[in-house]
Amino acid sequence: MNAPLNLIVNPTDEQRHQMLKNSLEEQGRIEDYEYIINLLSPPSDITNFASPGELLGVKIGVIGGGLAGLSAAFELRKLGADITILDSNKDRIGGRVYTYYFDREGKYYNEFGAHRIPVSHETTWHYMNLFGLNTEPLSVARSNNFIYVHNTRLRTSDSIEEMLYPLYPLTLKERNTPWPELHQYAFSYIVKSLPPNIRSEMIQILPYYSAEYLPLIEYSVRQTLENLGLSQGAISLISGIDSGTGALLNVSYDEIVVEEYTVDYRNIYTIEGGVVNLPYAFVQSFLLDNPPQYKGISPSQLGKVTYNAGCTVTGIYQSQCANKIILEYSDTTDPEKSTDVFDYVVCAIPYSTLREVKINPYFSNLKMQAISEYNYVDSQKTFFMCNQRFWERDTYYGRMVGGFSRTDLPIQYIFYPRDYSLCPDGSACSPNSPGVLVASYNYNLNSTRVGNMERTLRYNYIRESVEEVHGLPRGSLNPIVEAHKTVVWNNEPNNRGAFAQSLPGQKKLFAYEMLKPEFDNRVYFAGEHVSTKHAWMQGSLYTGKEAANQLAQHFHNNFFNKF
Image (cartoon, rainbow, N blue to C red):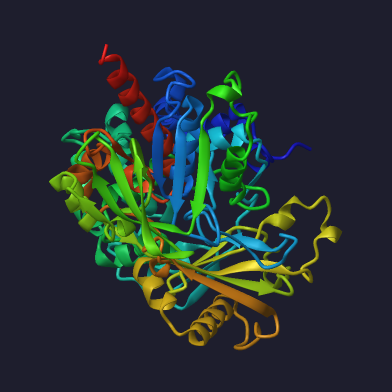
């Protein structure tokens, strides 16, 4: 028997596109398909803007070695440039891609950073396919995870209306509205009321947005739900069941519905062996004189990429002569600050850390304002290395293999490994085997509060919360959890936050300005924060490729304008 389309390993582009079409048809908006595919596809190849080898001898500095910086460097190498990546982290690569392994063999691991890859994220799939990375589905055939809300435990197959509705002060109309319809009204009604070309503005950065679309970016999630006429009881119910959204009620409504628009939580995949294999593939290609990904380009036309780990940029300066850019940086191996001079720079670090860099002269006033104000959300994840998979023992409801449990507790989400769903037969995958549980994954205030507990207190709090959600006796996980690890992204010195989430009005005010180059078209910007896909690898990879294209076009036009 063939596996369902959304459960196949290494889907082809045709299979991915069919999954997207199926999801959009179910939602009654198949007309969005072409917009989504076209707007999320990777920008044109850089050789359409300048010829291979055309930038030989040109020095380019890339600030940041995350996916945005790596993709920019990868593309610019096609033109022969001499590229230097300066990355603050000396211990690992990938920026906010962070695969953590509990064993040397790499069998037991999980992702502190980017993890999920929707089938609609064309630019991410472009690079995964280019490097030949294997992918595996994260979707589950049947969800039977927990919903633990208002001190009430139920499974996803149980009736939310019967078990949870009576616990909230809902209006008569809300009480008589089934949960799927209530949730759809909250997050699909306004979007579907817009013409397809208008709602496509959600994944575009434009100098001006249409009047019909502006309410989506000028009001917060809470304000919009109130404007829709939902009671505070309904908002509380939605926030409890959909706790990720509940943690982000203060951000722009657009930030939530853009993920609904591109169907980001249906048919999702990850990279086999760890997402870190994607940044590794970029870096490994830099070490080769003739990488197979550069078909049709002679090795003599390729540039050189130097990856300098442990180098934190502390200053970006415009030279007073020769239109050069000076980067000042500190090296973990040398207490003295160093400087280097470049013809161009791609700045691919988040604004949360760019805020700490000295910039002289200042960028545009709006750009500096965005660097100061743009909103970043904290995120915390805690992994439990378990010597047995206690979550797979339930025989009444069926084993929980993959998926996630939702709670209104501060731990927010519990994610279960899906690797055993791919077993050829059940005997090969015993619940007595070890596994890595994402015991807590939360955002914003939940993350800040749980993440900043003292280490032992935090572990005990998360363990007791997991026991509570699963209906286990207090302390029963102590002999099962052999190791644990927490990352709080606000406390990571090279990040100062997990991902960008615009506050009401910020997209209208800042998004277009944030993408503009500075210092006479010598400094370009990339990263998820300057994209329409905040928090996703798609945003980083797309803007890295686009920044490289903008740089190449400027160099080409500037060179030929001299003659």
